[in-house]
Image 1: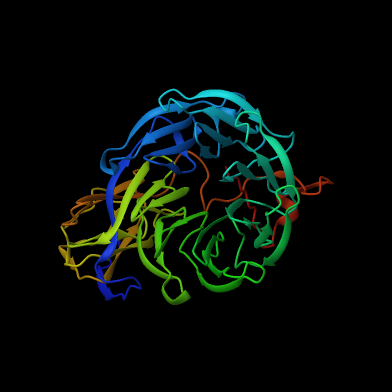
Image 2: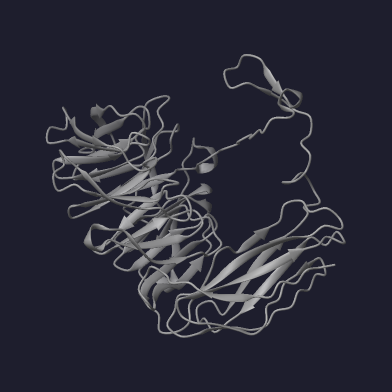
Length: 458
């Protein structure tokens, strides 16, 4: 017997301003794939991909962006570069173990390789630039301070020793460093050959990226969201506020009143009035948000498979936001049922109207009748999965009066027929222990709670 749980409404007071949110301007597939970063210079964005190298994108018309050039880093797996910075006619791509690749970009439609900088066994993550000086974050090897007076033949001036440098932000005589679990480090760089650390302060989580506006510095701190610091006195920074985002904050950018966060599951926009971070808007597009950049109130989002553009603005109509574009059930046995849900929110200024939708798959049931969701309110849709056949997929089509998302599909997946999934018995296995002495097998772990964590990152 399949359970059908009626959809219900409940008031949900949002923290951001009434009627303001992110409007979708465009979403475009580029010629590369697995987009990793966004670096903007003038009217162009440098978008590296995990597969296919760099795309140079004309963003002068955000609703009609186009690739005008590309660059493949020979010697890096799949041409992969993780981030780029530019200076004049040259671009510097950070390829972790494959070094810093230097490209002449005087002709953006046909960039050419002119050199490689880097030391063996050094992981070049992100870079920043001030005048003729590049600052390369190299994790446990610290920050490599490099002269670009000769833009092709870079020369090291010094190294700032840190624990796990991910990103930097230079401003005048100071360099602000996101140093992983060590937090925020500030160095005096008035003498580039002899920089020295003047202060350190812990962050709420692992420091990944940072941006500074006036006396405020904003730090992406992974699973703990975003930290806000007062750095008016660099020798004594103060933690003012933390906002714990819904996902994993990896990249941040800001304008004079807003911080935009690449949060893996969505783009989130925070305000920072009165020294406090407050949620202003968000958009879950269903893509894996890897990085973001902001020009005024226009936001560019590298989402693994797409480059999306949003505008933070007053919304004059209905605006639908979804908690998740995908609902994945664990393994459910025959003659058993399991119910999961997703939420629909209206972050616009008039009622959101959703047309009825009926399940096309007898294994899935949900009640989605004609529905109105008032501004600032939310609704949950309950989906019950009762596997009776091998038909394990269902797509829920939402037809609405949201003018930039008039149709949206929620992908629902049940018992995966082609391999193991959550809920299946563990097969026999044997793994080398982490210290490389001996092995661990399933029989060693029987009867005890066990978590096997597999993690990889670009």
